[in-house]
Length: 111
Length: 110
Image 1 (cartoon, rainbow over the protein chains, first blue to last red):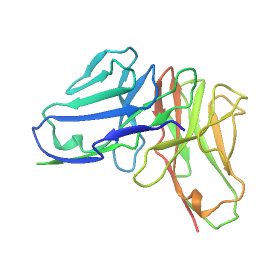
Image 2: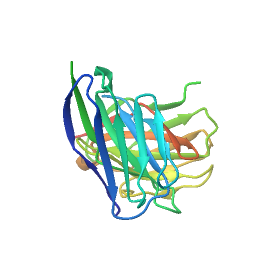
Image 3: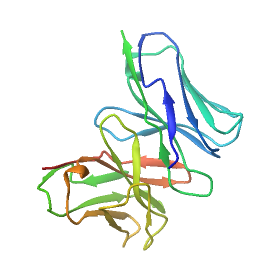
């Protein structure tokens, strides 16, 4: 089946640093979603992207819908300890409601 | 509003036992989903529903059944639990592409 590959798988960063992560697919998507999951909780939607090339921000988070429609990127600026968690990309293949989630990027912030 | 709630929060089963996980949402959403999350992995879709009385298979439906008799509830059943079904189960409901997730049910099958 379709897969969403996220990189890096995990990262340690210093507080205050900027973070970049990406998500790639072998086929096109019309919608890209970025979620964050804290330990012991369900994922929470951070940003939704609907159009190729779209750049959308949510506070210190900025996500981009890749021009090829096969990738998306998430940036976090000036990271803080509460940014710790797992970040997932997700999306429904065109014409379906069968959401696919990436394997996640685990972020750890060193104070 | 409670959002999406899941019952129970944690359960231990023996191989071959059956159980039902309950998901309830109070946001009047048409779409509801059941996922499982295994250690170090993303969420995988088990079954979903686009409205009351409808269900459809997701990516990993084998060993599970679902029912959506009421719009606000989505039930996930395991008829004969297997150790491979040990996982954390998340329910979600959605308005358009925005999915709202419940807190999860941790299931251990011995």
